[in-house]
Length: 232
Image 1 (cartoon, one colour):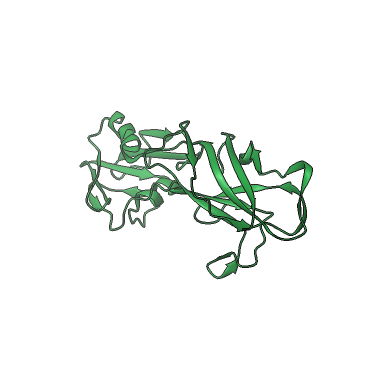
Image 2: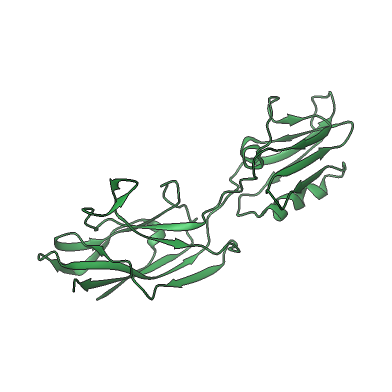
C-alpha cells in the first residue's frame, strides 16, 4: 500500500481514515519518493557588513544581507557596491577565503557572517587595513541531505550512532539547489524498516538536517510517498 503525505514541512501527524493493521508485526515501510521545494536559508536576519575610516568610530556605510540561501559568489557580489576597493576572494582549491581591506579603512562583519567566513578576529568583528586569510574552509552551511524520520517506526534494530532511532532514510540534495527550486527524488530500491506493531492510526514524518535539528523550510512544500509492504 502507498500513503502520500503532503505539507510534511509543517511537522504535523496525519490521521488515517483506515488504521494500518500491523498486529502481526510483519509490515515494513520505505520511502518511495520525496518532492521538495528548497526553502531553507544559510544567512539569517540581522546579518550585515559595515565600513568606516581607520581609527574612527563613526560608521560610513552598512550593507544589510537579506536572509536567504547564498552561494559564495552571491555573497561577495554585494561587496562590489561599497566603493572602497575592498575585496574578498575564495581559494577554489581549499575553499578558504582571502580578504583585503584597503589602506585607511576598517570593515566589520556581524557574528553570523564572521562565523561562516571563518576569519579569526578579537576586535568585535572589526578588521583594520591589511590582508587576511582564513585557515579554515568557508562554511556557508546549508543541508547536503534531508534526513527523513517516521515517528511510527519500530526502533528495535534501527540504530543511529548506536542509539535507537526513527530515521527512515537519507535523501541527497543537489549541490546546485537554489531557493525556490523544486526536485523530486524517486527510489527504485527501498530501504525497508519495521513499522510499529498493533494498529497504526496516524503517520508523522519529520525532516531534519545533519545536526538533528528540524529543517526550517520557510513554509515551502515537502511531500513524501511511503510504501508499506508485508515481510516476505
